[in-house]
Image 1 (cartoon, rainbow, N blue to C red):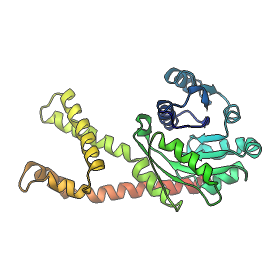
Image 2 (image 1 turned 90 degrees about the horizontal axis):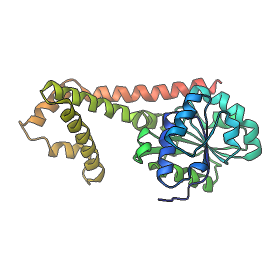
Image 3 (image 1 turned 45 degrees about the vertical axis):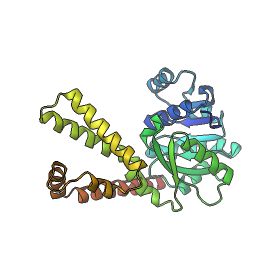
Image 4 (image 1 turned 90 degrees about the vertical axis):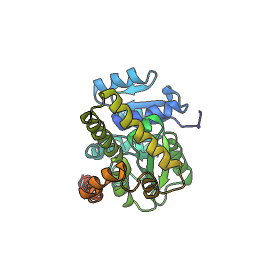
Length: 278
């Protein structure tokens, strides 16, 4: 489906870049309109293999000159150096710079790129690769409405989006939805292993674990009931689900999840502080 996506320069060719690129191509963006830079020859070869027709560059500047929308998809620790390298082009081109780097504040990115770049921070997640991502976006005051719309359109193309009003909320977003797929993958992994321990063949255990997770998420997304109500609806008093949930409650799973998300948010703040000193 063509959703009028603009040509894009993607700086960095890692996992998140691949997820976004895959989503954009599936929604009708021409491969020739996606310019990607990565210093790794192996990464560049892999991108060409997986996404034939992309414009691949070894130098960031070569990709950036090809579009006025830049998606900065490098590691947070690398972003200060990369942004400063691109500052002369940002001064000339006044790009829309969309960051997917966890924890790096918009003000720091704007300082490195220079005053003519308009910065939008985003926190997408890996399911963007299959069009099922969820992305939170934040635009500082002064970013033009038209550019907010472009950023939203690019991320809408790979899933659902939400805008946050306070940049500090992105630390919690990072811990919940940015890292969140890994939590569910771990649960699927553990459920599969437990099923095998109970005597199920591995192939059956994996299918049951994956499709149960998918079905539960689909039902939660489409139901008018909240997750607590849905849980109660499948938990008969004295039944098998109640017995299993009692074990999870006795292990204080609620507190474990709370501590895990808090740790992720704290790490996002630490990354921001470290990057801001760059």
